[in-house]
Amino acid sequence: MLIEEAKWFGDQIDAMDPDDVFPMLNIGSSTERFRKVDQPWIDEYIFKPAREKGEQVIHMDMKAARGVDVIGDLNNPDFLQELAVMKFKSVFCSNLFEHLTNRKEIAKIMTSLIPDGGYVFISCPYKYPYHADPIDTGFRPEIEELAGLFPETEIYSAEKVTCGNYKEYITSSPKKLAKTVIRLMVPFHKPAVWYSHVRHLPWMFKNFQASCIVSRKKQT
Image (cartoon, rainbow, N blue to C red; front, side):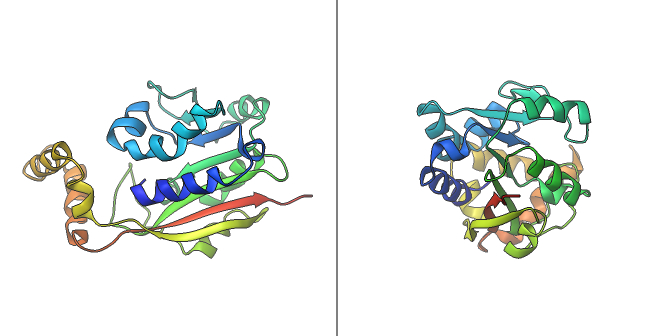
C-alpha cells in the first residue's frame, strides 16, 4: 500500500460511525513489521487511530508471524466458520486481487463475512508496475471493474488515488534508498525479486495510481 492510498482509507474510516465499521477483519494483513516498519503509513493512518479509540481490528493472513491474529485460508470452509463467529462489521483488503486468479470467488467470500449494511474496504493498483507476490496477474481495474467483483454491495465512496512515484518511494528514507540500490546490484539473489525492482525503474518519475473503494452490502 502506498502513502496516499493509506491516507485516503484513513480519512474514509474516520468520517464513518465506528459502530458501522468495527470490528474489522484485515485480510492479507502481512506482519506487524510490514505494517509498522516496512510501510509504517499503513498503521499510522489506518490501524493506529482505530487502536487508540479502542476499536477492534483482527489481522488475518495465511502465514504465522508477529502481528497476525488469525491464520488461515479463505478457501477453507472450516476456517470461514471460525471467522463467522467473530461477527465482523467490515473487511479491509488492500492490494491482494492482482495476485489472485479466483478473484470473484474470494470477493464473494469476503462479502459473506459481513452483515447487510456492512462495509468492504478494497484497493487494487490501477497504474503500477509488475510485482509478483508470488504472481502478478496484471489485474489493474477501473473503479467499476473492481466494484463489479462485489455485486452484493453498492459503492459508498470511491476514487482513483494518485500515490506519487518510485523516486519518492525509495527516497522516503536513507535506509530504503540504500536497500534498493544494493538490491539492484545483486541480480543473482532471488532473481524474480530483482526483476520486480527493475520493472519499477520506468516509474521513477511517473505517478502510481490505485483504485480505492468503500462499498456497503445491500439489504436483502
